[in-house]
Length: 154
Image (cartoon, rainbow, N blue to C red; front, top):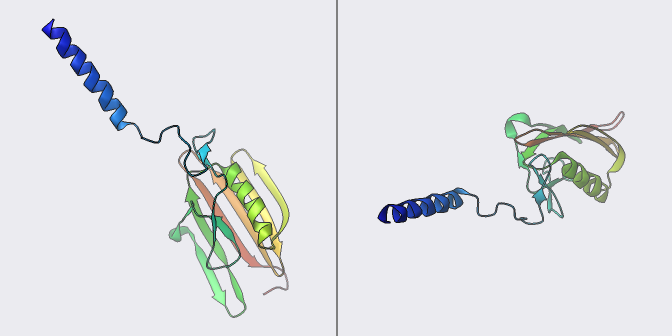
């Protein structure tokens, strides 16, 4: 009898230990985000911030900038470059974010392409163009934003 008590206690501790290791928020929604098919979260009703280099390109606050993959050139009258961000979100939800938020900053949507977990969105504004590439991988989603002058623009 005593042996069974010890085995029951050991089993209870083992099961309790497993729940201790599990994430406390597993399966729950967080700040308007839900789990996506690939495991990445879906951006929903997210807040945005402007890229300081360009001033009028919104990005989700959840995405983190990768300085090693970003480059911005500034000269009188022109700012252009590439800014790379990443996060653990679905590519489709990030593409929806830009389709919604860019026109609010007077960017004209030109077109979009998608293939599997890759997306490319093109926008135009006055004398500048913006190309947004989104690539969803198993561990994260990378967003590359390229802004530059159009022909004759500066």
